[in-house]
Amino acid sequence: MSSSDADRFLAGALEAARDIVRERAPEIPRYDVQGKLGEGATAVVWRAVDRELGRPVALKALKESGAEVRARFRREAQAAASLSHPNIVGVHDVGEVDGRLYIVMELVEGPPLSDPRVLEKAARGVAAAHAKGIVHRDLKPSNILDGKVADFGLARWHEADASLTGTGTMLGTPLYMSPEQAQGRAVSPRTDVYALGAILYEMLAGRPPHTAGSLPALFGMIVHDDPPAPPGDPGLAAVCLKALEKDRERRYAHAGEFADDLARALAGEPVVARPPGALRRIGRWVRRHPTPVATTAVAAVALIALLATRRPPDTLAHQLLAQKAEQVRAVAEQWQRQGADPGPLVAILGRVQAHVVAGELASASAELDRATLLIGFDARIRQLKQIPDEWAQNAAASAAQMLRAGQLDEARTTLEEATRRGGLDVPIQERLQRKVQRVHEGVQRRSRAGGDPTPIIQLMNGLQPLLQQSRLQEAEALVDRALGMLGQTPGP
Image (cartoon, helix red, strand yellow):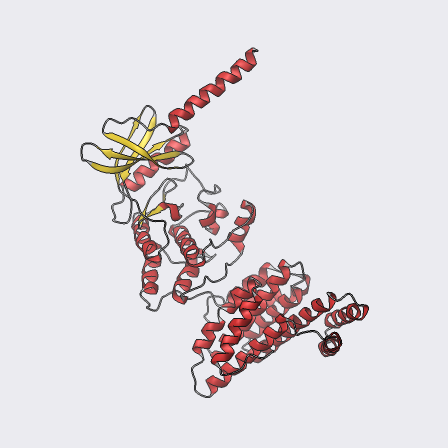
């Protein structure tokens, strides 16, 4: 064996020995270690018994000895020890043995986090930290144990020296990270509020608000993309979406406000949170998709941004208009995912924004009716392209050219003739748009007659997430239920 091989062998053996030491439970005279509870990148948590007091404890021992890791570990102990609250895991002891730092904590065991009531309790603990000026920065389901908050390893005092982890460094768990963390900007209590909202979202939807195949893609979604509203109780969804606002100033100011509103939602009481208005969400989406066709729309959307904090009048006409606009936006996003050009729909949404700002709801509605036609025509053109006959291909090409020229009536005639010739069924996309229009007309008639259309409107609020996920059969079934509530037969 050469000297270089021997050196490498010796270095490997020493590192293996260090690994054994890191994995081995620390021998601390007062504590009997019974078994490993869990392990992270820098520390191992053991179940132990305090012999002097005869109580079970959790013993967290550091694996690594780097200066920054040790500083974070000490900060965790200091942050947790400075807090005394029934919803924060208590710290009993800290120390160092054989060069390894350790923290002795309250032992908390319980089922995986799945109940919003447990999250509300944990939020009270986070609120206590915020009251002390401490931001956790790494809230996630595994750090919430039976309603108690643990792992203050990334915590920092909000006004403290940033020498350990200054602005520009991303720390935290990506799936629950706020936009400001993803961008390496300064944190605040509202950063923890975002993480609480992400945890609540996962409880309600069965998945985090954003998932992606790479960190850059995930961070882009966190900073720019709005998740669809989670299913279930509207109050819980409203609390969740307020906590997940991109603009931190629109979130709850601290975890206490989040906990209070969550408690109201769980009790079935009215909540403070209001979900982002449909038109504001559409405005944000149009600004992020400035296609060449939509260039003139962006100027109109810029005006909407100035008025974003004003809640639009809560009239039936506005509700139906916003609902139709959300459905058009969902189809535009679907086109984009399929590689089609959403530009025409984006341009229409931009014009809708301008009409709404000017109070021209009838004009805005007419623009959305135009979008509905385009969506139906696009579905028929796609249907014809699947037919190998030359006549079908020619009809599809002619209709597409007419649409580009704005000749909607001519395109309609061409497509209807081709549909009859081929004996084709009406595409589900077009059928769905027709049924939605019937629901909106029926809702307006019921309102004019003095009836209450609220249950139908609430049911139709579930349509947009289905369209976003291309679940067209389920979307049609939902609209058919709405028609049934109006006393209408579904029909084509």
